[in-house]
Length: 240
Image (cartoon, rainbow, N blue to C red; front, side, top):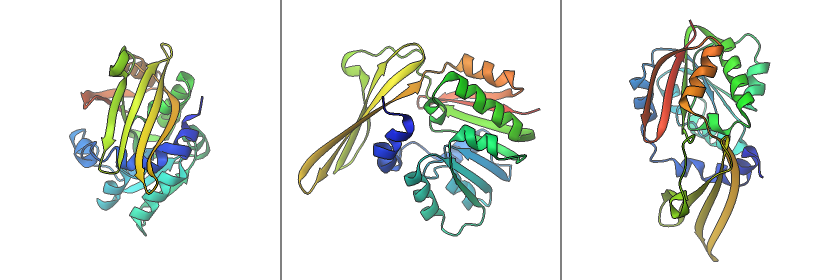
């Protein structure tokens, strides 16, 4: 099966910003969780800058890390010469291992980034890296889709993602086992030659909220708040 990075490089990176345009107000999300009172932010899986760009506009310092060059390029172009931005194209875990003694006030891992990691062990490794690089009192914000109870069948497995006059996107969700979900993205676009459909598949982790909070607790992170909004689970932790 195609890796998550390959899928973003070959298909999803080009349409991702368009596909999540109606996902909501990122600053409202951060404000509702009292995450705007800090100065130094690390955005893991920053993508095109859904959170990084409004944070920069608010005068914050943001280190944005992502594995996809297309999305980081969109962020770079939108930010212009903003001095508070540091961009890093890298695997998230490798970056946390390589960034020395750097510390941040808030670390973000949003937009289902967590489920794109390759294994449960990788999630635990990421949490350990986050705990090392949060300052004392710093916070770690997670947002992801909990598909641990996914059981859709038939046509219910096809989920509309986004559409406009020239493009439509669906995804097909299929349970592989208790650990992974197969996601097939289906993008149809109108071109000068007529409709063109592109498909790509990758796998996502199925992460129950109870498992995620347990793993975070094992590295010393304390749960401050939690909730579910528009199908996305949100968890905010603090390093004591």
